[in-house]
Structures are given as structure tokens and as C-alpha cells.
Image 1 (cartoon, rainbow, N blue to C red):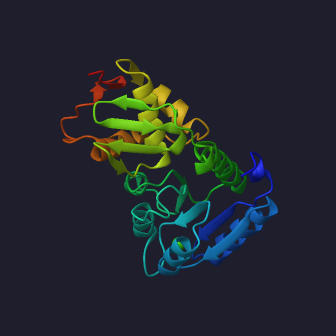
Image 2: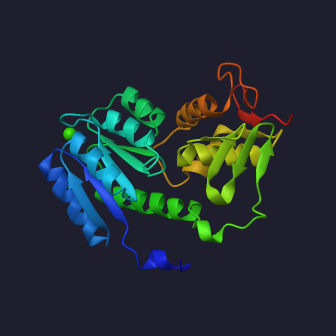
Length: 245
Ligand code: CA
């Protein structure tokens, strides 16, 4: 694969939205940006499309006919073909509940309606850029790939892969970045603000609560007892520390 092949390849974005006006607006603006856009107005159909031909990014409304966006998100995250596809959730509802639940289910970002199309396009661009940076073609893997290891946990940064006791754990992109940051700084307290800046830097709307939600989810994936974490310690009122065993 050529190094700069992404310059020539059009990213494919799946937009799932049942409100026709919003769908049209999104498709128009994303195509104008040069993306290839596939759209669907119902959750069940969108799941089929995403699994048959995995897109590079999904924009997912929460209120959808047949299968709602939260369930679509959950299923995309539990399928190996779509586990790492960035998901931007949209919702008309203001409840914090949706936001937290969406992020817990593995969405990478969240926007409330009404949203600014310019901001949405900027976020899409940033999400795709991050995804490109984290993706390494298999052919480029070398035997001396730098790994990060702590007890049973191993991170293969180039492969964007995490194993615990030799078993692969499916982490979302954000969870991966969080774990990588923590494990690269063993014994050091990383503040919520720092984690937020490093992992979500480009997003203005997320707050430090988001960090806590992702840490909780990350612990469920890598700790044997998430309620009594052995690796990711909470430093009350400050942030988190990866315990150097
Ligand atoms: Ca809707």
C-alpha cells in the first residue's frame, strides 16, 4: 500500500438518519467535502449495510425506526468487522443519559441537534484523520514492533491491538488511546484534563465526565475485577494512574 494512498481514496461515510431534511443536509455537505456517502433511514437496514460493506465512519442518529441508534452502535461494536469504525452519534434529546449511554456503548463522539454542519464536518474530518493514523497495514508490521507490557496486558501500538493474558480485547479507538497514554506513563498521575486534551482535544463539547465513562468501560475490558481495579487507579479528584507493578 502506498504511504499516501489515503489522499486518493475517498472515505466512505454511512449516514443513518430518518429525518429527511437532516439526511439531505448531511449527504449534501459530506459529498461536497469529497466523501463517498451511503445513507439509510432505518437502523436494521443500516446494520446490514455496515456489516456487508464496512464504512470508514458512521454518523448515527439515536431515534430511528426498527432498531434505534444505541442498539445499532452496540451491535457495530460487537462485530469484528465494525468494531473500530468511528461512530458519531446524533440526538435531538438533551438528556445526559443518552450521551453517557452512547459513549458507553462505544460511540466516539456525540452531537446534539440542532448542530452546526461546519462543526460536524470538522469533527468527521478529525475522526477520520485519527483513524488513519492508528491504522497500519499488515504488510508494514515488523518483528521488532515496539510493544507496551504490564503484567498480563500487552499493547501492540502499530497493530492497534490489546491483549490480556493472550486474548484480544476489542477496545474502541478512544479506549485504546486512553490505555496507551496511561501505560506509557506508569506510576504517573494523569489528570482528567490532560486525558481529555490528549484523547478528545479537538472536541469542544465533551467534559471530564466523558473521561470517567471511558475509563469505566476500559476497566471492564482489561481488569479482572473492574470494581477493584488492579491497573487503572483512580486518584480521587485528580485523575488516573496506571499502577506500575
Ligand atoms: Ca431520528
